[in-house]
Length: 204
Image (cartoon, rainbow, N blue to C red; front, top):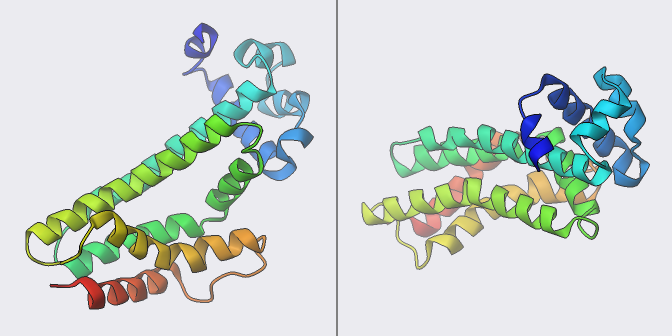
């Protein structure tokens, strides 16, 4: 733990994690080798092992950095305000664009593929992803209900329905089909349709 903290801001560590991310995504955990990562990052193998004691530690760092990157991207949803339609449209378009990103899907696919090997990492990753957007959406829905703009029984159920209308075409179908089947509509169009369906059910 001490070694990791000592190197957390080291540009060599950043280069290693970024190169490792490419290898893990394209080759999987088992197929990834440490030596090519060190070479492509421009550091020695000894330096790599000084920063990450083994491949498992490097994998954990890759997933942790990806989760942080995702949190930064999703933080944009905090800026949306206005009437329910505009506010929800801003939230959901950001979410749809995020979930349709090929790299985001690749990281999720990697975490799911390695869940049995790294169960704690996988659970932490998915829980963080859920909190980063879901908690913000639930708060926004509760605020809109308090203001008399929406009416629903439970915000978490309503949020799940709204997110699900985006997740199915944009995320789950491509994930299940390996990217062979993708939505023909843009993320913004899918988000807009979801918002209209949601408001038809829950607008006060």
